[in-house]
Image (cartoon, rainbow, N blue to C red; front, side, top):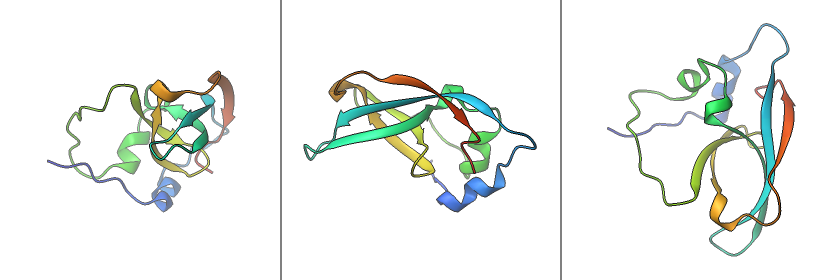
Length: 102
């Protein structure tokens, strides 16, 4: 079975009734092409219940990721992205996120 990630417009389906506060992170890492990337993200374990169901279609098997790679919700791109912990440049800081799906 394969993973089918929905388009970023699907995040409209998951709209909480009130303001949602959650833990997020911001950090810099070096991409495969050597460029530096800053990402503001929420780890999957920190997403509220039901969020993944609203964004994934079908059955999702466990996928082995390369060492140091983590699937996260990118707050600026409103989609799933990979964060590379092995090439972090500086500190990864915890941030408070309000309504990450708006």
